[in-house]
View 1 (cartoon, helix red, strand yellow):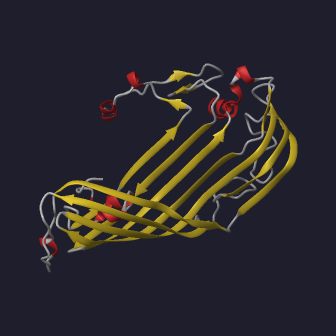
View 2: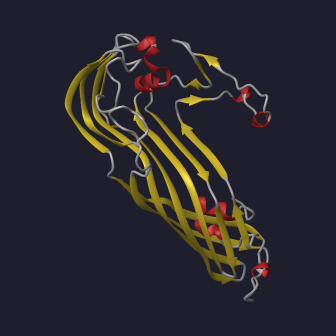
Length: 317
């Protein structure tokens, strides 16, 4: 996010496109993965950033304490409500151009965001270890506080504009805005405000009572789970980013205007501050969208670990 970041700075604050060391920046391909949670963690002594640069490095894996398989992370053993946020981005062809106090940029990206909020500890264990988590077998759990989970995947094309609107001695003030056209590919959400359930073993789940709602839209045929042969765009929307920044430069400013792009001025700074509102917007899914309300329902799910032989498609489930 430095003054050398070019078009990438718009991801954090569109106002930071101003005062770039580049008058022209072209991005071919980039990406990033962000994960934050209070349930699973990697042991500090087992990981070193520079090891990831070694193509022959074997990532530490640990056998599951229950059931089969391995896991890369340890878990936090407390009963607090759990949360997790996954934010992934693949940035496609993008570019920015600066001309005096104005900077414009165009970017493309594929993005995915998933979140889990207010998840009880027992449910977090089942989500991570599956129903193999034997210490909880045979215990009936009841939760009456809201639980939320959601995920959305989309592509976007965005246009950004940043402007240095104030120069006073060593103070530079900039504002920026990004408008994005969003193309939704898949999404779901689950909201539960009451759940009472019982797991006797690693194959069966008994729902005593559940109240809430769920909705989803996926690019698959719900009758056979095959990839939908129509458009992969299932929703359309708009998104906006707003930003404001303050830069305290090392020397006074110049009011000189340049006609040639390659002569654009840059001002070294001692520090800079910024504030931004990111991803304010919406995507409305209409194609193959489903919504269900669960009003004090109950049921039994046998062989949930295999999803078969009776649960062969999303419509039946």
